[in-house]
Length: 141
Image (tube, rainbow, N blue to C red; front, top):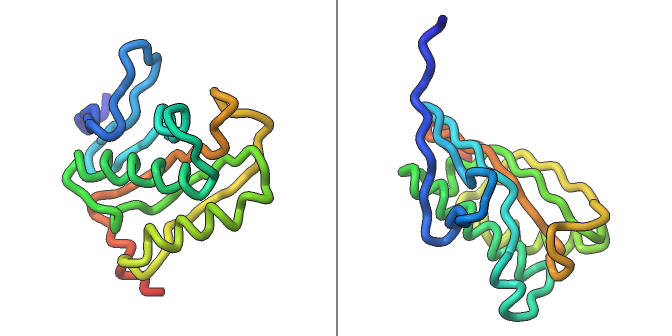
């Protein structure tokens, strides 16, 4: 059997694993970070948030998980964005431009429309992949 990289659960107060979860929000395997789909729950349940606002909340959760592993948003290399209405792609794009403005580059990304998310008030879910030995900013704008 080949040597395996140690796996570590990522823990963040901004994106806690729920006690009833049957998944882990983030796992570090060597320099790789695998991040589960994040939503704006419970923020979107506590206050009405449009897709732009939900996207910023979700990106903040992703950032907190990457930081829990000792990284930064510069280490994010791929995002998959799920929206319940493809017309919201502009709102998602605006939030992404603001979120990654300091980096000067954008990660690889896929955006798809889905019929529903886990709660009806949710309009966006994002999962991601990051590498601690990768610098997105080195790509330039």
